[in-house]
Image (cartoon, rainbow, N blue to C red; front, side):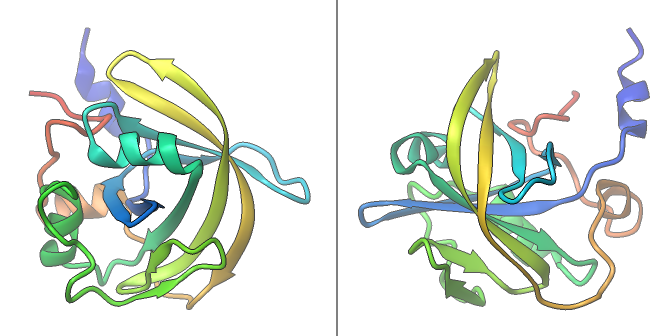
Length: 168
């Protein structure tokens, strides 16, 4: 199978955040999909089962999604994409606000954000697909969004091994 064919699928880059009790977790994902456009839109997000964010989302049943702009730099992406929330405070030095759901929302290099509750989980092998229902959403600006193509070809970023699109 020619796995490079999958590189032609279009993706964005997002920071998802969650919190259970006093434990905060967050990571970069490239798989957020709007599934419906009803009053409370449904979304899908895919997270590696080994990520602390996955474990914390399952406990919390809530998640926030920050849609990154092309202004996102490797320091921000590296902090959320290549470090674990278990042993590193990703919010330290990161612009954020607290969402209506009590979970921090990353606003640094962000064009919009969505707050959601988890309504279902689908086991997808190495990853969990979380089915979400949006509870709040806000557009912050009209800057260009960060696509995975831009991340790889302009920023020259790498894909971490736990990403859904990783290929060695």
